Length: 168
Image 1 (cartoon, rainbow, N blue to C red):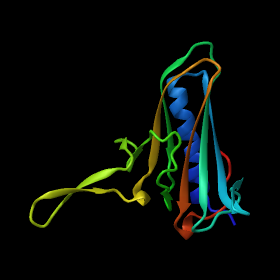
Image 2 (cartoon, rainbow, N blue to C red):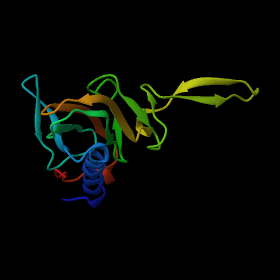
Image 3 (tube, rainbow, N blue to C red):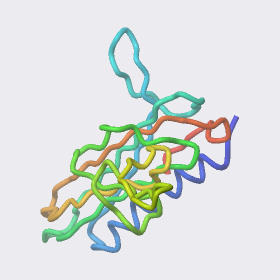
């Protein structure tokens, strides 16, 4: 059974990943690999994400390659977190990642927000992981001929988000 929503989100993730790198330099290429995370005989195994169901864990791995002759500066990598999924705490690799609920404002993980109390005071509280929609890494300079890999995991929350997942 295929679900257009998840497939569209995965394709959008690939496009977003590629646009971020191409905006930096036409010599940087990117690929997005999507795998279901299973545990087999006590070991983590990455399987094709052909079908997923609520509760499944999915790993996104974005690879950037500088095919040019010069380094590329200020490279950013952004992977969207599809609706119907929740970002898994501690899964961002490299760990120095930022997150966003809107794709515009990014901050260090864990995201925090200010909540006004009934008495008028405010307090900081963590943003639920299910509200994260983007994870971004500042990769800095990517040397000529070098690769950079970023990864994150999400848990499938909603039945409408389950389906066949295709590589973009």
